[in-house]
Image 1: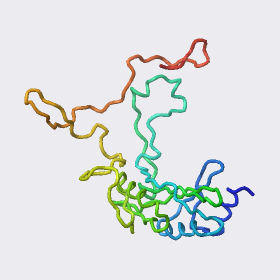
Image 2: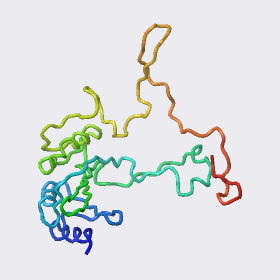
Image 3: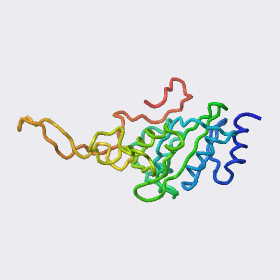
Image 4: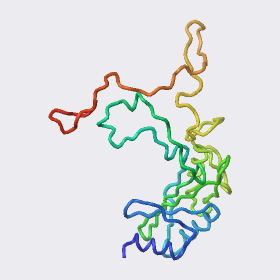
Amino acid sequence: MTRVEATAEALVSRIGERATRLTALPGEIAIEVAPADLVAVCRELRDAPGLAFEQLIDLSGIDYLDYGRAEWATTEATSTGFSRGVERPPRAEAPASAGRFAVSYQLLSVSRNTRLRVRCRCTAGEPPMIDSVSGVWTSADWYEREAFDLYGILFRGHPDLRRILTDYGFIGHPFRKDFPLSGHVEVRYDPSRGRVVNEPVSIVPRVTVPKVIRKGRDPGAPGAGGDA
């Protein structure tokens, strides 16, 4: 029995129906846990002899705002030229989900040399909220502050939940994807006034297309180098 198989068996035996197996790459294990069971399951993942995930390697927020939406079929994009950058099809609606935000935990068992990914959805609504696991793994302290800063996820029970990356007085959360990429205000020097001025941004959002649009060519044809 491989380490992965032994870990999967121990998860079923110890965690049972509190964990749902997720699709993962070969040789990896991923599970999803309900918010109400998160802290208790994490303690068992750390303390159970057959699991022994002593170390939290990483913790990150996930935003499913545009998950499942696609503007173009890109499987054969290299053979269809650049028309997809000119003619934009209507966007498909995103599939319904339990909540927009989730948190992913990357765990390592040093003693057993195995890894595990745990995902937990935040409670729906605003602000998104989830229990802190800083009492289980102390390394979660800064990781949870980062997820709070970038996504606005509140971690219930965190001892010192405050921004860690953005500047003092920053408003909003950079990874929420709910603001224009060009921003709202631009700063420039006005020679007529002799000073720097703040003005509404004047950039018009657009899809960038190349100056030269070539028709798609057969990649297998002699001398064909693909679209440029």
